[in-house]
Length: 239
Image (cartoon, rainbow, N blue to C red; front, side):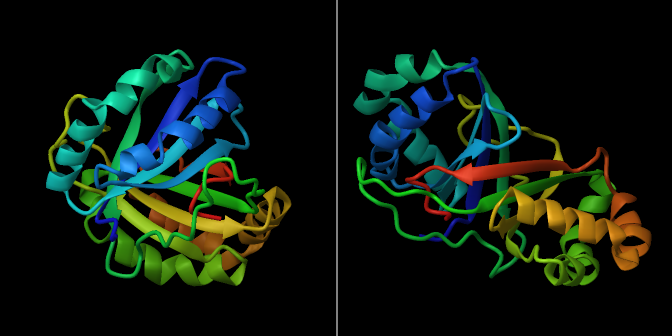
């Protein structure tokens, strides 16, 4: 299934409830969502924010998204488990609606073990969200690929996916998304937090990045980049 549309969802949770939500999600809310035609791409623990659960799901189109979400949220599985899920959440409306910047920049997924099959997820996925002015959004991906990707790759941070805001009107308004915003999203994989820390240090010391590439890119930013350091759960398809 191609992910022409991707939701990046960040849930802020009540302290101490993240493991409860992950267990419920991985046991009850993966296959049940996929049965409606969407794909649960990945579920994560945020390394730096212990009360945040981040996940990604994909759809073949905006029309399919509306159909699948209606089928799931009006269906029996969500009706059975929504109270247990919602009681863990302070907020669930930090959602970006995204699409691949071009062919070949989509998220590539692997296999997922069955529920209850032990598997220790490995590695760290780093998602960097660049908030952009409307005037900078057009052509930013090409600018980023030309200036930034060679330097990021040289220091061990080759992107595994590059996405940008999907400009369509929210096709399922019962679930809010961050509308009228522009973002470019880079995903990269590292062995662990220490490997990412080395990447950041090396990049900052590279004059080509610090004095040329980053300042050029930053002229289009409306805020400092948001860096999410994420550990996949055992049932995530990004490992």
